Image (tube, rainbow, N blue to C red; front, top):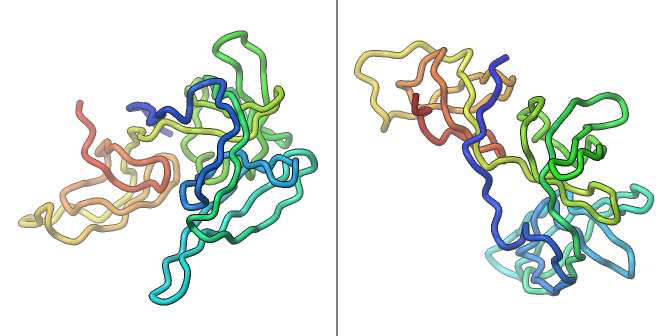
Amino acid sequence: MVRPEITGFGFGPESQKGIAPVKVIASSVRKGNVLEIDDKLYVVLTAESFHPGKGTPTTQIDMRRISDGVKISQRYKTVEQVERAMVEDREHQFLYNDAEGYHFMSSENFDQITLQEDLVGDGAAYLEPEMKVMLSVHEGKAVAIQLPQKVVLEVVETEPITKGQTASSSYKPAKLSNGVRTNVPPFIGAGTRIVVMTEDGSYVERAKE
């Protein structure tokens, strides 16, 4: 397997340390956010907004209660306010995974911390030993992970390049070196290194050598 190369994080103000509790609209909630509901903390597993042709737009949020792992789903109006809890985002290196979860080491003090499989989700395919990620930590417990926005991976399987095909032609299926399947332009062949988004595995561009 070819180790993915990190091409940069996409962290904005939300990843700064010491965030105070703040009210935000439901449609702005993202995976990995920590919400406070009835004095209990929940980490967001998925958040999806729906905009029907008629009726009120809503946001469906699936969460896991940090204290006991119970999962719940809540539907809010997209403009309804929810409270985001304070967490610290700290840089860690991925070490390995086993039956207990995914193990990381702090870049600051070398302490190790474990993140459960459902919180890593599909991002697990992109994790490689020594990869630097950001973990959201609450009272010493990791509750969410932020991968680099983009990584470089090699295409290991795809249809052969056909003469005359251009970038404007429809995309074709491909398998990447980490096992993820995606779609690539017709001029991309097996053995080509490409930049993909870790959020959904989508093709960005051919990697620069």
